[in-house]
Image (tube, rainbow, N blue to C red):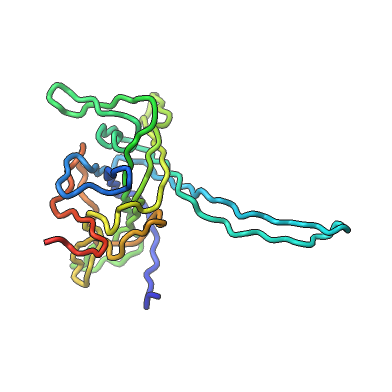
Length: 243
């Protein structure tokens, strides 16, 4: 058990990073091309718990009185995910839904084409939030909330309505166990008292569907379009940085 605890609240979504995974939930290797998108062009990320309800056993005796009453525990199965975007990033939509990128004459991604059927890829979702009420000390880094869904099976684009107002796009999906995320390929937490950036200190396990915590490592910068994996990316269960 930890010797102390830090309670926190979260407010506002600061940044969203989507990383392409293979069918087993493994992230790309260092410097893999067009493997991630960072955006702040989202309205909301909704998570609904899918639960297998426990069996309810009830038996009355011959006189109509309750003789046996027992219910087994409910069991968590997965998160059902709904993301609403307010910005059209073709590369992002290609990562999270059943569309392919439409390119201009010079290879610039200028839109998407939707196709019938399911998306065969998967993705990881990371979300950074604000943490209100934290004392801001001179020379100390800002504290953020950090949410990780390490293995998301994408759904499809939801309804789109063009009207006299802002048009938004929704995408659905659901989580699986952690897959091959391990400690992750990114520097997302402070690993010592000097806040040295590093990966998760404990690998995500196969039955873990999400992680929620605070971090003092700032979220990545926004950049429209797909980005390559950083050259420091790793995915080692022991958390050691490769030479």
